[in-house]
Length: 102
Image (cartoon, rainbow, N blue to C red; front, top):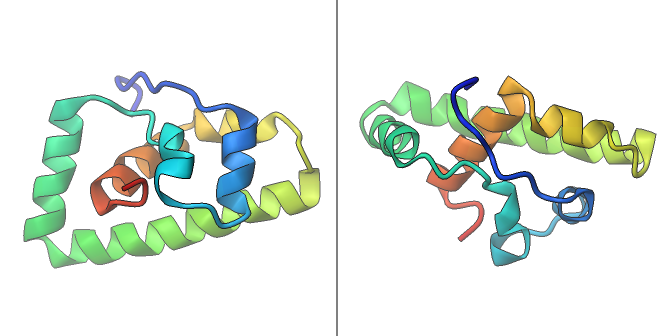
């Protein structure tokens, strides 16, 4: 995850996501454009049911984390710190591969 350089979405997009927006309205959150990383994750998603189920569980938990952060912290820029963490980058990859932003 450290080798991936995400394009960072503004706090307002993260807030929209926390409020339930999906698809193209929050596509900026999928800031990982590394085709190799995405292709590897996509392949693993298709061939490994445990990886796929774990990824779906991870996405649900991360959704709750982001929602909770906005509920408890408001528009605190700490949300952007979480987005730039290894966990945030894993979210970007998994969400793009799972079609959250399509």
